[in-house]
Image 1 (cartoon, each protein chain N blue to C red):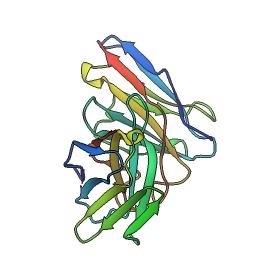
Image 2 (tube, rainbow over the protein chains, first blue to last red):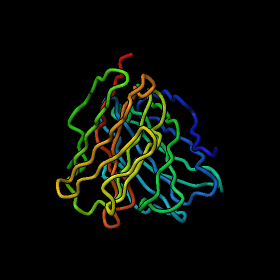
Image 3 (spheres, rainbow over the protein chains, first blue to last red):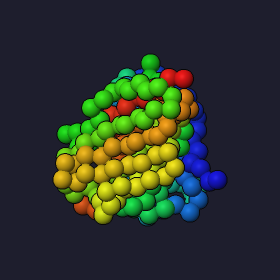
Length: 115
Length: 113
């Protein structure tokens, strides 16, 4: 069964450092998303991506964040200068179409720890 | 602004009994609702969905009920099994609410053997 994969599973970094979280969405999916979940809190939307551009982003997704689909398979989230409050689980998701009547398939997540 | 709310952070149920997880939403433009199940250290996995044209959808032990007038949905698990112990998130989307799902805060279900 196709699945969304994410690497690394756990990333530890120093405050102010850049991190890149990687995702491989399901191959025939066209819409890609990043969510995060701070420990004990709800899953929060960060950004959606379609046709090689951001289609929607939340207020969390400020200038420190960027996304890219550098090739036909990877979808990355970059945090330029990490802050302590960026520590969270980051989930990548993909859908075959838009969120209307299409379920999102989530990856296992990357646990980011900023020290 | 929390558009999707799960007011019960946790729920404990005996094995074999019914588990009822509740979710409320505020945005009347939502027309598609999903339940996700999440184990620790894993991503959410899709469980069941319902569109606003229906008021019930059933898949095996899982049934989702939608009450549009009350802006309320619930997930029933019958019979509950210990393997159902997980965090359950409801999520919602709509054609005019942006290309994202809005998630509730989750309910941690514990099924006691």
